[in-house]
Image (cartoon, rainbow, N blue to C red; front, side, top):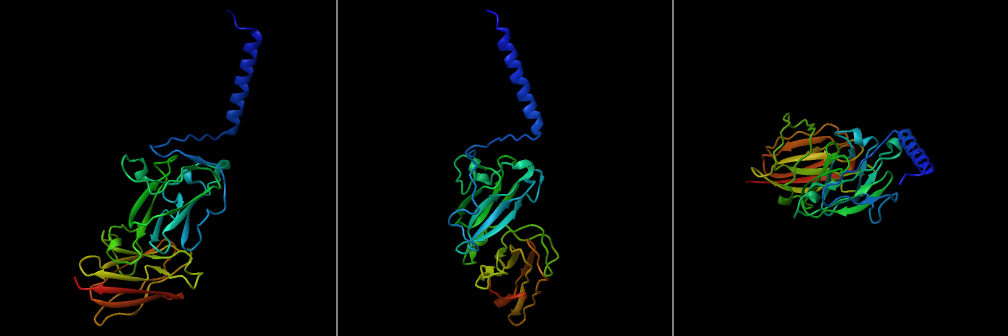
Amino acid sequence: MSQPKGSVGVALAVAVLIIIAVTSVGYYQFVVCKTNSCSTSTSTSSAAAGCTPPSCITIAIDPGAATLTTTAFSPDVATLVVGVNNTFQVLNNDSQSGGVFHSLTADTCAQTGQPCPFDTGVIGFGVTKGPFTITKPGTYAYYCVVHPTTMVGKIIVVAGSGSGGASSSSSTSSVSTSASTSNSIPTNALPISILKGASADQSSLGFGPDAATVVVGVNNTVVWTNNDVAGHTVTFTSVPSGAKVSSSDILGPNATFVQTFTVPGTYHYICSLHGWMKGTIIVKSG
């Protein structure tokens, strides 16, 4: 049975209009989801309910993130301290080409039988998802399900007590320190975060944890990471007799400072730029 000529003409006209509409946009985005992660969200909010700084931090997806390889997330390495700021939210700020879809998904979410500690699902530009709270110390790698090979990051969770629970965490890269010239940090080094917002909030602990205990020969190297937007220092004000330590220069955002302790005793330090920021390291014999 022959197709009516009028119908053929209408079909051709519709096809031409679709081609013109698609080619006029000039930007295409395809979402390929891994197992257990492909929910989407298009609603927007300025802040997720229950996420209040400085106890809750924001990880932003940066503009142009789809084309970035190391700075797609801000910060792309975040240090959280249990009981201090171990809650976070995620904000998609990628406005490129009118807005790009992304996600922040824990690596384990796609692994059968493994827990999924956090997953925003696929979210549009301007969308905030969370809050997410992590209570177990460790290193949590994550990726964007839309751009899994280029958009990656990690969250380091530190025990609030500053004792052995944090030893399983790994430290950040880009080591900058006046106390050590080596780019190699022991895997059992104790991480301490210079907390986001510490420079503007005199009630902030400043350092997380602000009191830490290390054991010589076990975890006696400490790595401070500046997670604030302002510069800070780690300046020792008192050390045990016979101990030799170096204070840091001014640490910019995301910079790190490394110090290894070999003499047991109590070490007190401050940020020389913000006097309310104080910390203590207790070193015990192995």
